[in-house]
Length: 120
Image (tube, rainbow, N blue to C red; front, side):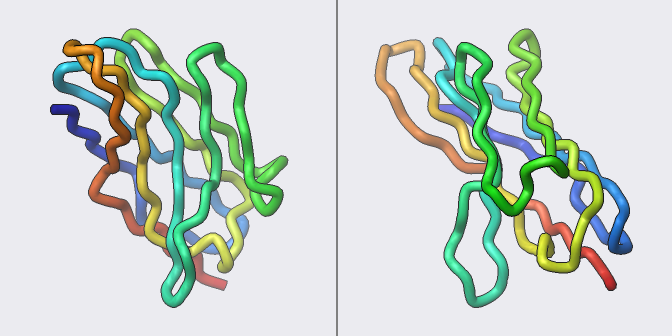
């Protein structure tokens, strides 16, 4: 089993910044990708950004130029630096990891979610 522990959410004014962290632990053979999704009230969960094992990154159009994803492979941790936050960024942010376990079984894991609230 693999556990994902998120931190860094909170309340911030529009234009402010937050940094989310997500640390993976457990029976990890290799992490193929880690990323962040978000879900606002009444909306579907959507991809915000992810980073693949080789280091390539993807961003939702709505966050390009404002958010930056990074990864510390030694710590099995992914970060999301969020700048110039807007009220529409308000959501619960979920960490996601595509993991090849020690038994060579591939699974996708989710964190418990962290609330990000941006006030206008």
